[in-house]
Image 1 (cartoon, rainbow, N blue to C red):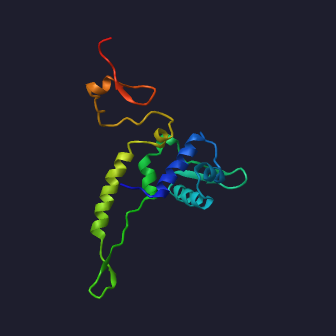
Image 2 (cartoon, one colour):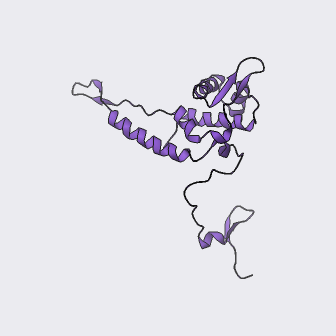
Image 3 (cartoon, rainbow, N blue to C red):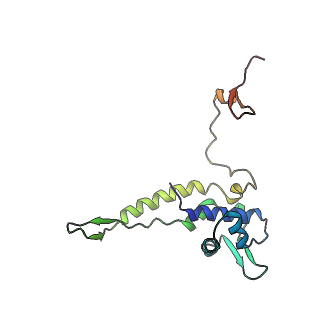
Length: 167
């Protein structure tokens, strides 16, 4: 699944706010740090604020910050705030005129797929993404390493080599 650019920018904005550890972050600083336009950051901040993911304070000492702790913001919350799945499909009619077709069934399927995708994202928090703690524990057991991978190590050149079991 491909997320739109605004969702990626929103995640990066929220990570910067999480790393600020409760301090307000100026929109101008976010724009410069993330190499985004001020207009784009304002647009995304507005959406995140409307969805109660960040809070904003106006004025000279203002800025934006997380509305709640990073470990309480699920990655799925961010995607739900930023993504929509409404689509319009145009079809050619016999007279070469475009007409809209009812795609409510398609939207239902895409909404279901998005919810399944978001359910996986809900297993992770913004704190996980910001490196503030280890990944959230998953309900699935971790895959066991194969015997070959247990004997493998990375050498300084970056290549994967096998450890010898003899010496």
